Length: 380
Image (cartoon, rainbow, N blue to C red; front, side, top):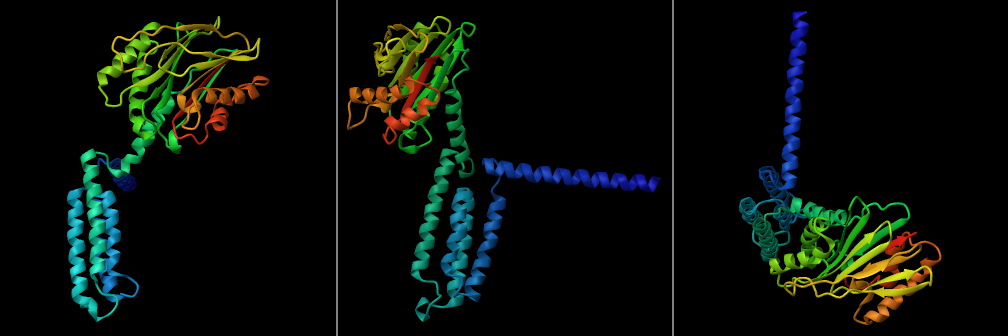
């Protein structure tokens, strides 16, 4: 019995030690790919490849060229820190010198270390060192850079998610960044206040487009999301204007439209900060009408005031708010773009507008090199 207990205890210890080792390896791997771990493992692997390549060049020069040393140098430029990269370069230079001594002068025939090989290896090394120094200065290693960009994009998408509306209402929005990029200078934030009876939605168009405006859009969407619902509706745009002025950005203005909609009566107020007017479909007449309030751009005039435009959404009515990229282009003016949008939207008037936001952008401004956003609200 004692022997059996000792054997079981020994197995348990081995199992525990194996578990600790597995957790340690996994944690080290996670830290490495997050950019928080050491790069000694990667450096060691790359250093081992250098003598292997050098030996292959000497023993089988017809198959392995001296320029093959660019492979560990290229990979090192992606995964190593500048100090470790210099150690890799020193080992590569040593291997290149050994190869040149063993193979003889390049004038004696093919498969020798030529000036061209040295130039290619040095060029790749200089490029890798420049990239590594840039990563070190920015503080974002390549292993996590893509993840961070993905997280930023997802944060903008989540912040632009519309709240669920009560029965009889439908809302949807679609964003299309310029040039097929993942980051847009247009964003939407929305929330329900006063016990869920009021829908507040803000569509903002930040100056610039694509990735140049994406970082500012991320910052503003977070700030505007915090302000929305925390302030009375009449105070939102003045507070947003003051926030932009305090940033003192070189290209720091934005246009914005703020909708305050009573989900019980259908009455709404529309505040605008230099934004293009929206359009409303009246189910009773079948006509579209522009809905645009007056107000200056955000981040330009200190102490600016924004007066609302009042309206009502009755049964079957539709309200569309959008950014100027949807209706303006170098080859057409605002009026022509809005007429085109209304013409395409009329195709949905006889059925339903569910799923129409994405299709309207696709039909009206598919190839426009500007950020495009469309917010659509229907009272069914």
